[in-house]
Length: 128
Image (cartoon, rainbow, N blue to C red; front, side):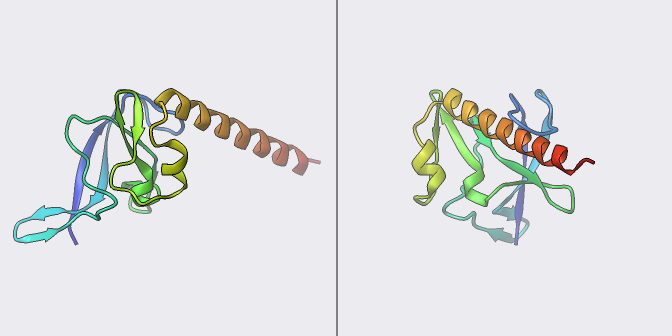
């Protein structure tokens, strides 16, 4: 199986340890190496150079960035709105396809704040 190493320039960060302006490498299934070729999954085409995306990433045990949920972790930003091209009809596509980037970022910020609040309550409840 062939993987493509995608160099990604980070323009903004909603959550995590990656910094704005940093370049990272993410792995995607698909590509060509010598005489070996692996086609990308239909739901997760290879990222296109010059396009802008909202990505949900995680790091695997080997230290590689991967798209969370495979195809679910990638949305192209087109004219300020999200486009889940090539994806099956799933909850993310139904909720966010065609929504503005600002709307989606606000939802993510709200979720992360709520998760931190619950974590703080849990941590506080464990103290003696």
